Length: 318
Image 1 (cartoon, one colour):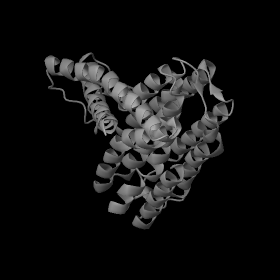
Image 2 (image 1 turned 120 degrees about the vertical axis):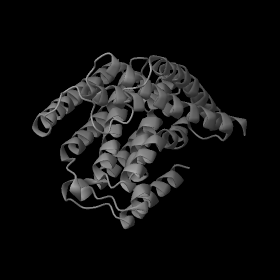
Image 3 (image 1 turned 90 degrees about the horizontal axis):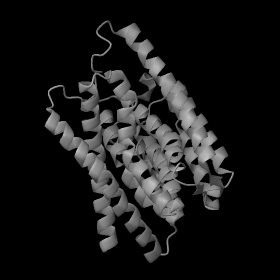
Image 4 (image 1 turned 60 degrees about the vertical axis):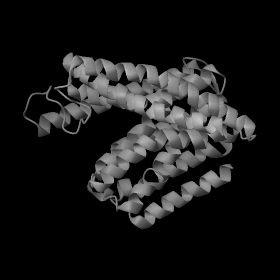
């Protein structure tokens, strides 16, 4: 029972520390004069992926490659089926009103690139550099698009904080920023240690493989922030935020998390990933094609369907 409790505690610490780090980093950057545009494209995006990154680094350092790979592949599958499915059950996601075709195609290309590199059997530092190069190209393209959008739509100061950057608080005192940064920098490695160590113990206790633990327990846990964000966006009828949250998270998982983790050490790809799980991840991504390109809404019926598919996938894993 204790490993389960410590695993849960590690997850809670990770989520809280990740949020604290984002808030501290955003407000420190704005105080130093970094434009909010750059902050939103880099610091916020990387900060919200910090729990997954720390887990991957910790797992690779301790030769628990299955947990590192399982966390990324499982999180991407959960982001499509669970993170879009559950909110759609609560209220229809009006995805017909948003245009995310370009970012969706980039996500599919990132998925294909990731699968292609995984087929080599081991993700080496060279694989990581390829993924990180793709990430740099994606960020550069996103930055250009954001600048173009602001020039076309906005006439104010370019450095004015972006609307919707909830972490930004111009009145936050320096001591409070320091506390947020400290809690994030201390909490993230602590939470990662607790979660990975005890997830490995659980895998051995119940004779469940590390990849399955990564694909389920760890992946679902690290997808909870995305789920919470998507639920709120759905209730506020912000389908573009909901869909963008999922697509962006999947892009960073594939390109940044594994890309950086390979700098710590090579990641051996379990054959089961190549036989089944990577294709489930790609298939789940293809499921939202009609909502992106044919302007279809994700209705409650689709929500039940997506959630049901995810439950079925979890049952198959066990």
